[in-house]
Image (cartoon, rainbow, N blue to C red; front, side, top):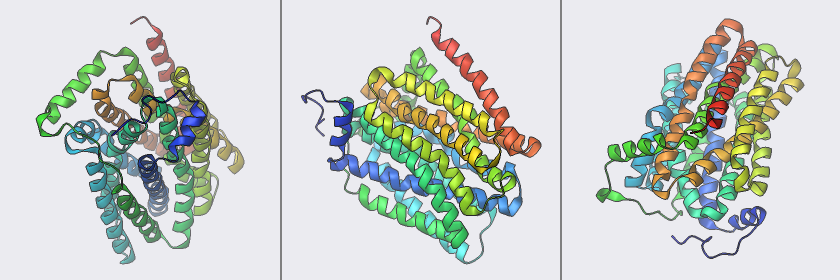
Length: 410
């Protein structure tokens, strides 16, 4: 499709952001990200609370989050290669149809009082499989729709919405779980995924390489060969791994800290978890309207550092207000980080490598499952709050090492 930025006069980041709101293809893909993001985070909070209430094990809470992230590691890189042959839009539609069906099945099982932990484990894995396709398909579609001139605005908008769902989703999940139980959570998910499927039918298809292009395996190998020769990109992806190994896993312990340390209700835990998304949303909105190309890497690095520092503060916070404030500021850092993550990857590689590198990015995000596993073991041993403190210290050490490596002459 034509790139609306070609031949257009230079505009401010603010003007570019506003103009995107008048373009239907962008609004469709953006809206689908918003709806599925709410479903993802409300399920994550509700399932975490349910598992902790049923088992009392912080490790199992972290394990279920790890299961949800496992497909990012297994399928993240290959999704980008597959999308080039099958088509980005087609993969998104298949995933949305499958998630709608899965949510409805869980409603039936829960209403029949036959829900077991293995059902939730399998559902978490399948949900994570859909999540693994998001970066190399839906997010890549968004980047192609907006064009290079408005890339920061488009990715910033999408990131701000994603972060807002991390505020709205947990609050909704805690509220619905407390009022009507887990079946209500899955029913709302089914509605959100179903509406997203209908909306995506209106999105224009993008060109793909099809059967005449290189095979999936060759495409994947070419992508990793390109990555090996780009030291800057390797450093950026290393920071992504650090954030997901030692920073973001703290979110899985929010239900445990809320129940165990702060004695909060399900809705109270949902509000506590939503503080992270609220902070991330504010940061991403500011980035969407103000960030310029020369700032991308600085915002990215500063965001990861702030998040790790605030997780360390959370480990010693006393009371709901202090804990909520630390979580909110951790979210601010995470919002800066996540707003720039896809933008840097998409804007710094040739067009032929974009889907592949977005797939590699999904793989790096999936490395966080190791962090959730590590945090779960620490939490069973030390308690949830001290465990997130240990994780933050480990992450800060790794961050410093990577920064020193990136600054060395190539």
